[in-house]
Length: 409
Ligand code: ADP
Ligand code: MG
Image (cartoon, rainbow, N blue to C red; front, side, top):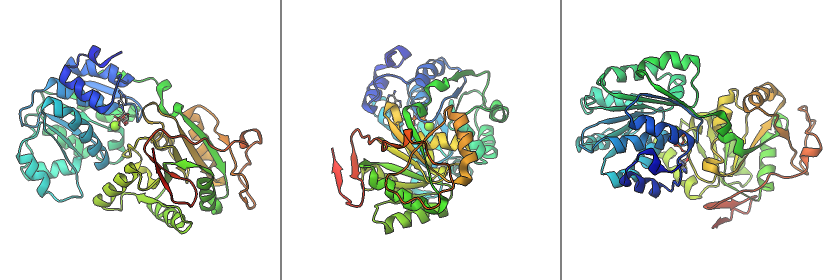
């Protein structure tokens, strides 16, 4: 299937080309024609399947630029909002729409100034949207298309009262589209009222991005995790990797320990200021740091190409978080490796994850590592031989170990 067959005009297709997309992903293939036909939509597809373009392109196609907010995308985090804006801007260069993101944690002045100049598509986090509306800076009475992105996450994060208020401010004559990685009964019950007689698009789990990820566990006592992580990074020849921890405190501690061991690393979590987070992500994107330590709140926001390894320093308690974390690698058809450091206490969480991903993850050892009185089950010999493969496909990767050299190719 080609983008042209979805009913997109030449301008929009030029933008799609500028984004580097050749062919639509399954969710784009299914959602775009439904959206262009003017139907409400409930779309369920895993992280990393291209949902952004599935709602951005129909808006740019269907609505004439007019300098009045006619499209509104509500999304839970600043990072997601920024990524949607970036993608929309590329295409909007060809269609002539103005696009703006507003989110909290930064001063109002700049956002207000740009709002006053006139915006076609507004991408917003719920709190700041309501704040700016309360100040009289946002007029929502012209909204024709509403998108609720990551609806399940907004529910998890307690944003639903805000979303309900936002819904009450919109014209009832509108098209609503809801995108979510999961559509549980609870999600459906709570969000049902946001859409009207929707067409439902489900992308089969067989196209789960996790299928493209090689997944391993490294059994180790909790007290030796940091030491093992350093040994593992030394073993990997080259990488652009994200290390996930369960809490902000642990993220800071792991970062600190890695720095002491001579590994260049940066940290991203919700305690850091918006500026710091943006700088950290930009540094990671351009390859200044080849290793990023992050918490789950950040997992969905990080859309960086060519992440070779996702390392779970802690195994997440919720299998969805595992899926979101490892979805940071193997983006858009690339391959990737996910490594989970497994302590005895985490065996139950691992079993739940294995049920969700539908396979038993094979266990490995770091060769030559001095495992002290390990109480977690040892990996079987057969799967313990090979070191994780090194994968890369462009960008900047740091040579593993302590050399600190950076290579560009
Ligand atoms: P989701 O919102 O489902 O998590 P995104 O919209 O963030 O997914 O897209 C994930 C990644 O895939 C992004 O890097 C995006 O640029 C890329 N992508 C999206 N659609 C396509 C496509 N049709 N062809 C190639 N890459 C794509
Ligand atoms: Mg998304």
